[in-house]
Image (tube, rainbow, N blue to C red):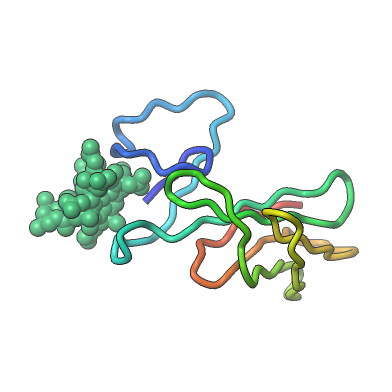
Length: 111
Ligand code: B12
């Protein structure tokens, strides 16, 4: 399946024209529960080592990702709730940061 800008297009990938700056996500899923799993989007909070994860359903509606973890350099960092997003600070790190949450598609990776 695929999403463009956190939203699941209702047409096949061959029927969709991308614009400059569009974010495309490909992932494995099925429609066994009537819709696809939520996907996670990770953003960095300014120039800090803190990151914010948000879950998106097929319609692109944002929600709090229960139980989200940040992964970096082989470590797992817990997140805390902050309005709609889960937030966590990973401190000094070398590798890319990703977020996972139970039942959701893992996030993009950020420096
Ligand atoms: C199961 C399913 C899937 C499975 C298919 C794999 C599998 N092994 O079963 C998965 C999860 C991979 C899938 C993906 C997608 N699907 Co789908 N899928 C269905 C569903 C629920 C049932 C199809 C089925 O099994 N029919 C029974 C079998 C016997 O018939 P069949 O013709 O052989 O079925 C095949 C085709 O339907 C094909 N297929 C499935 N989805 C799509 C989508 C497109 C655009 C195409 C060309 C073919 C296709 O895979 C089936 C199995 O081989 C239908 C809804 C429905 N109830 O019909 C939606 C449906 C066909 N899918 C749809 C969509 C939008 C998608 C996605 C584009 C979603 C997305 N944004 O990622 C993606 C395709 C990604 C891409 N590369 O473009 C739409 C199509 C709308 C349209 N106007 O074209 C439908 C109608 C659901 C909906 N109401 O939105 N899908």
